[in-house]
Length: 352
Ligand SMILES: [Zn+2]
Ligand SMILES: [Zn+2]
Image (cartoon, rainbow, N blue to C red):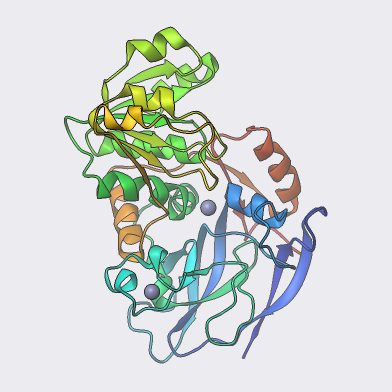
C-alpha cells in the first residue's frame, strides 16, 4: 500500500517551500520503509528548490541527509529489521550492474544514479522525493546502518557533507605525514578539517576572513592561512600534499596550486561549473601537480565513514530547526549564517 506522508515541498523556483501531503510509492520486496527522525539541510537542497542548475522538477521535496527508524521491510530485505536506525544519503538507486556499481562506486554509475529527490524512479518513473517529510521508502541496497551510540542529529550531515570530504581523502590515501589544506569553512569544510585530522594529517584551513581563525583552530585545524593575504599565501608556497577545495562557486585555483609541492593534488568537491579564471598549465607541469574531482561516495564507503566518525567521535556541528523554519533556514544559509548545518527535527515538526 502506498503511504500518505506529510512533507514540505517547493512548487516553483521563486516560491517559498510549503506543506504538501503526497503518497510514497508502495514498498517493493527489497524496500525498507522509514519513519524520518532527522534530515540535514544541504546547499544542494536550496539550489534544487530554486532550479539553479536548470533541471529541477516540481513539486520537489528536498533533503538527502536522512536519519530514521525502520517501520517495515519487504520480503527480500535481509540486512535490516523493524526498529533499526538507518540513514539515506544522496542516492536511492543505480543500475547495479555497470563496472562502477560493481566496484561499490554507485555515485559514478554509468547510467547515472537515482537521486534521493528529483529523479525518475527506475521502475515506475515516478519522481523521487526527499527527506523533508515524515516517511521514505528506499531499497535496502541504498540504506546504511547508523552505528550504535552515534549522535544522530550530528550524524545526519555525514550522509552528504561527511562522505563528500571523506571519500577523496581515503581515495588519495591521506594519512600521517601528509600536509592537507582545506579550502573553505562551511558544512563541507569543517567536516574536511575534522576528518583529515582524524586520518592523521596536518591540517591547514584556508579562509578569506580573519574572523574564522579561532573557530578553525577550535575545529581541529593545526594552522590557518588567510587566502586573501598574498604574503601569507606566498609564505606557504610548495608546502602541501593535498588541497581539499570545498568552495561551491568559481574561484582562482592558481594561488592554491602554488601552495602544493611536487606531485601535489588539488581536489575539487564543491564546484560544478567551469574553472574560471583558467588554470595556468605551468602550475601543473612545473611540479607534476594534479587537479582532481570527487563526488559524494559509494554505499560501502558511506557506511565506512559513519563507523569512522563513531569511532573518532566526529559529528557535524548542527543547529536544529523545525520544518516550518525551513524558508528562514534557506535565507540564512545563503548568507553563510549557519554553523555549520541546519538539521530538521522531523518528529518535533508538524508539516501540515
Ligand atoms: Zn548534499
Ligand atoms: Zn551502474
